[in-house]
Length: 526
Image 1 (tube, rainbow, N blue to C red):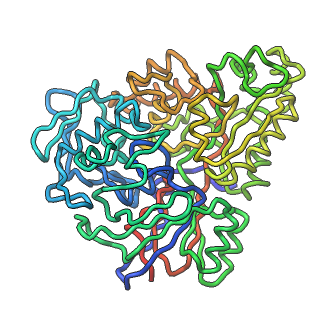
Image 2: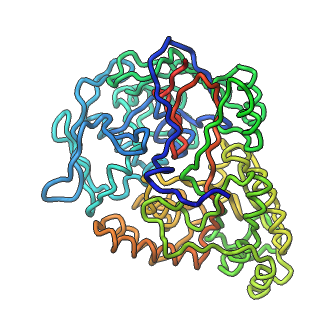
């Protein structure tokens, strides 16, 4: 196994960046296993959507090659004087791709849209109590308490043109349905949407009126989702595409050994985990337990954790390229708890003892939901885990499917146990506490991805204190308490930090960021 070090100065900001120089204009073709589910930046809060749309839409701030926050549609920002919140000074002279002028009204409209109950991004704005337009190019976000992380937390908050959205009946996002913004886009970013055929092909072209400095030489970008990663790799090696993310781990050596190709390896900030239906009173997919949910007992959840042999998973499925995780963020992320670095060891005998103590000496059956095209080797992981569970009496009925159907199933509580990957958008431990550990609370816009509705009153009490605390020692003490509580209660089973394995032709210069976002404006075809 490689080192567990994930220091911000290296892996977090340690990018596979190659100096891009302007060359002749070129068509660029790339592929990934997962298509962007929608072109609406407020409808689905997932990496495939946000990464793709960061090429078309922009926010007030953005992350650079080194993951640091930098100006985008806001040229500067500062804390409000005399009240909690932030003032953003907007960039003048910016136009949307249809020629409409950008101003503060578009920011206010986008905030109201992105924080609506229909939006999958509303939890981003849980601390916000009011948004005020000061003038056409100045806007204030007032927060309920001091919130030093707020600018970082909205790095993927993208701005729509109010007139365009309203005139096309897309004033609100359509998360589980479709509207005009699902298939069409009108941003201020470096690229514009040329055509869209979901699941088949999406074409982008440079935005000729973009305000930024052009660092790429791409005249057309063609994206093709290829669900089978081996098929995608074959397309790369045959020259049909220029770049693919990810490639099968076992094929990395093959690519590196071929003239004209290269592999880009890193470690993502994403932790892969199993979650439970904490609030479910009964299992949905059990043949022997129909009137109870054994996973409501922390002993049963701990038994499941003890059943998993992470060393074997790393060796057999991931070729020694993963690090076992003990928290919902990897080491090196702000707020990582150095006081709680242990994880349940692989101990099948202890797992059986715990099941017996919980009243299930013979185990039981249940349903395990997983994706087969979202995370690296996700289906293989779940099949291996199901076998390990069975060895201690936890008989999983495994169901795998494409991510396009998966989030709907989880939102509809259609699971007993599920697979989830989480990358903290703020690169801080507060992020998964807000989304995954706080009790579901639509009014406060909290717990929006806490599908099983894990709930602990003390965790809910600590979150706002963590959000507003400025003293780093005091803040870390509170995060440590949350980690201790959720580890003791086995709120989730953290498994590992996902590796990044990309491949391209060797004439392609690009940047691999630790959040697994692929940004076209840093691509040069030589």
